Image 1 (cartoon, helix red, strand yellow):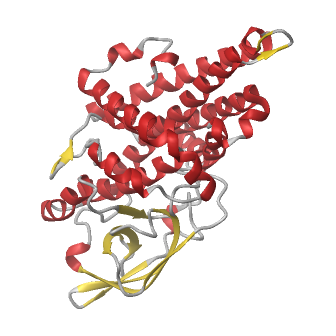
Image 2: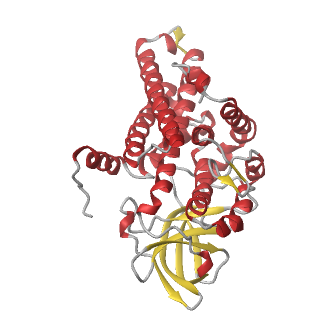
Image 3: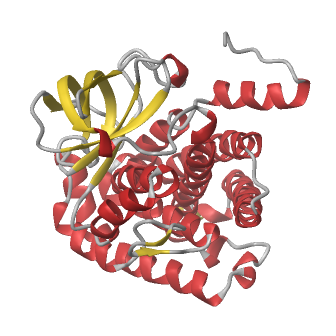
Length: 387
């Protein structure tokens, strides 16, 4: 959390370890990421040069404990998400793809599977990816069509995945598929693998430094030992989805904080009609709304993470938080773009990247409409979903 926008002094409620995690991630972003990220963004290239420094932060794996993972509090894990998004949404997508692979193994894998893969992933010696979304199914994940057929001592995977972060270079991809009993399963595909083809998605207007892929699986063989032990139903995935959605709320906060600070700095320094922009009522009204929205976002993120720490967080809570934070962050970023005027369209001023990337966040981990329906089902007890 940025102290510049901490109107309700929530920084005082952080533990010293949580504050230390935030500060070291912020220092890395300020010193190593921000000076170079615009060039990579314009070229739509992933900055591999940043991976060793990111690994050195010792935050991969977040709240997972053991097997080399840092065992952060859920709130500290959220602060990492916010700080990375504060620097760049595409870099955050890289980290979340890696994190989701780790969480899948850490929450749903056996002790042997955790010991096999998590240490190298925590050290970022290997990079992971999370293969859920398909070309025909995004929010409707229950319509998963990728199939896993048992064959001898392993499985054969056939299907396609789309919008898979890190998909073009990941060392392992957790692929979600239905088996012959129509049960959901998570299968760790170690690459390169025969029949596994990952093509980069081109022409993106958001998260441009992230390496999103269209993956085609044609007769990809994986050993039976690569099927995650506890991933047998959608209900089993609830802790994973809860953690992922919680982190996206913090990510939204990071985008909003960055843009608020950039807009305030510009408004104080830029003069129009003989006085700073910040002296005009309309600009002050925007800044006031931005700070108020950020404060509400921060309070919601903080409470959700503390509830997660207590084991009391629920998916409807996370959906409400994602709906609120994504919508509020989108407005904050738009207000910042307007305050910067034409300068807000230049990558060198950073707001333009956030302006593009917030559209991706507004969509992934469940669109606004999907979050409303999940919350509506919680309120009424009636599901508006087809199934």
